Image (tube, rainbow, N blue to C red; front, side, top):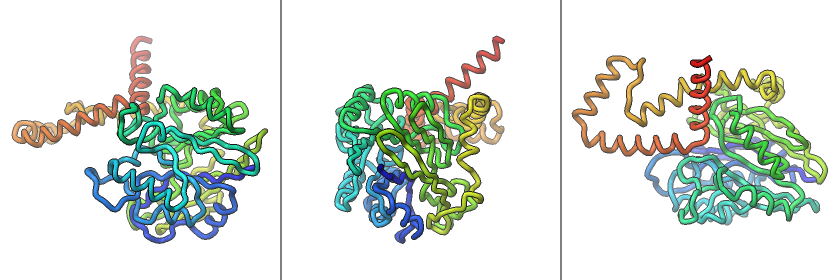
Length: 379
């Protein structure tokens, strides 16, 4: 039996202190192996765009907390470019931490980690949906492993030949939403059909449900483990309540235990299940056949109208029907009087438009919304 602790997203932008509570550290160290998602590099240099960067010493804190493996296939690991990723990979290795999912060449990004615990061989691999720096070409200098890699099924088969169990860690889906999108569910089910035994999801920043698919286990989102948005972040923010999982794996079965925790005053500590605002049982009910279709349709409509359509209007520099006169006037004046600004703005908008087309989540939301709208129009 292998006991594996798995937690969600770690983004530490502020703290040089230990950010994992003593009781929680004891749980992590009681496992045979512990895994965390490092969402962003740890680097002391400068980057072109200020995004997600770990405070110096973050990986050392994770090491001291009992973690063994860092997941790096995520949308922020390459925010600061090749040098930052190079440093992060080297520092993880220096600390004795294994890493997976991001690399300085194509093959290494997709390379699995295989461990042997009490005679049980477990293979891990880590992928993320299409964001900037996803690996889609062997000529690419650096990046992270992509869920759309055309060799994925072959890679899973190869891992299966030398292991007893396969665990996939996937970073993707809709942020701040308790309902996993249909394409994510279909993809996770497909992974299991290909031979994966456990799928662990991340990226939404809040928890989502857990389901059994045949004899396989799927956890759609673990949410955040430690991700303060500002130095005074506290537990009133729903994103600061989440859970980790302890997997109990043997050759014939996979069981799990939920570990509820909250982030408060720059430390993550255990939380009583009764006080947890999003219980796993309730989140998992969303996945039931009766409820899922209705909630999923509402989710598509809400996020298309409130988020995705806005992003398309911005990237295409178009105006919406409900834009105010003041906003229309401001855009018009800027367009006429600021050619240099428009030039820079156009480059950013073009990048945004390409991202909207490439990203599986945004593309799926647009397709589902327009498909449903077309069906309603011709009913």
